[in-house]
Length: 429
Ligand code: GDP
Ligand code: IMO
Ligand code: MG
Image 1 (tube, rainbow, N blue to C red):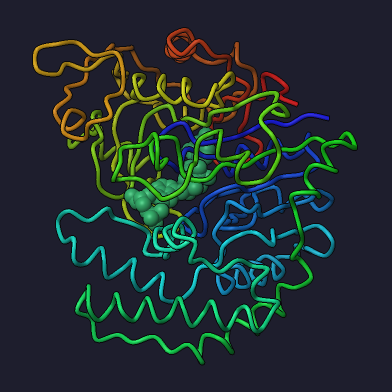
Image 2 (image 1 turned 90 degrees about the horizontal axis):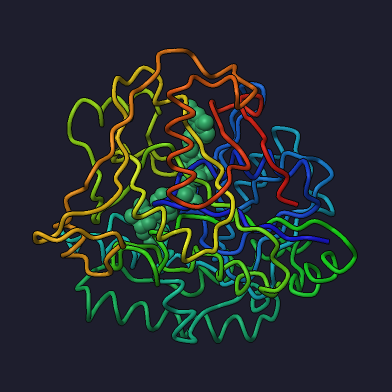
């Protein structure tokens, strides 16, 4: 009986998919608790690549259970496409995929409003994935949302849909001046079909996850996005619309905080970000381009080039504080191989003062100048190293400094995309 939370310690895309897949070996159940198909989690098994959006990254382990929790926003069309795509690759979900009845449903008008809002914002846009995530969570908070369970009561669904569509049409016409008009009849028919297709997986997962935990199973919570994209703790408003921090894994599944044993932050050996918003250690020079090229830093969901920069330890420390991170899974160390000098930000200079905390004000973050500590690099190929002690001395010095700065232990150091290219150092279950 144990529970570990695995979450992003930066701005997303830290390699959560790879780490969750590796750790699923030791777990019995993997549960997604927040976000939607804005997430893109990559798993590479013997050279074959899987990109998961809504389905937990434990899916490739045939005997393990997968839960899509109540905190997730589900686009049923995207979900069905994902299930079908994975089934084609030989993955069977019978009896081992469960979707919460309480999860909110992304409707076509949510995507439309998301994209129109971004267009109107122009240069001030958030750079969302355009998947309707924000408007769906907004409807949830406004008590206007449609939940998975609502799809199975035709009267309830029709009534909620009419309300949602009327409001969306009002917004499109009166607020956004758009010519688009949503038709409730089309959506009604389409979504009832989706509901039938996903019916075998729909469940009251709150009891399920607690029963599994109580019966001695090992539960892993898979975070989406990252701490700095959290709606409360991230670089607001340049964030997503859910709690991607540790607390979100409890509210997003119904498993209580006193069940959690370990919180594992997944962190790249450097930093990336997709979309707009402050990024103090962003690089615009050849080092940044090198990180993008060598690290293949292009979005798994949208294909957008990721912004790249040095590791920001002030931001990472903030993530440790907010989430209670006790282990870090460090990824992409191999990408730093061949760099003459590696830098890590250990403080910010702002208006002549030194800051060692992550400021909430966007203006302050934008004005922060990183204070760097420099480390000599290494040349040796480390992708085949399977023992921590066999890493080049300079790599170990960098890792040791980061570990001490953050006051954590490493449970994993990852040196390549594949399952094989992983050093497992501690058991988190
Ligand atoms: P997630 O959203 O946190 O699951 O991360 P993504 O899958 O969006 O992006 C991480 C990318 O880095 C993927 O392409 C992974 O295959 C890749 N990756 C993960 N760990 C490593 C690593 O240690 N080294 C290298 N070179 N690539 C890695
Ligand atoms: P994973 O789980 C990286 C970013 C978007 C945008 C902001 C808001 O793969 O790490 P949204 O569509 O959520 O309203 O967009 O959040 N974003 C991500 N960036 N990885 C993700 O997920 C992301 N999910 C959302 O780029 O800046
Ligand atoms: Mg991703």
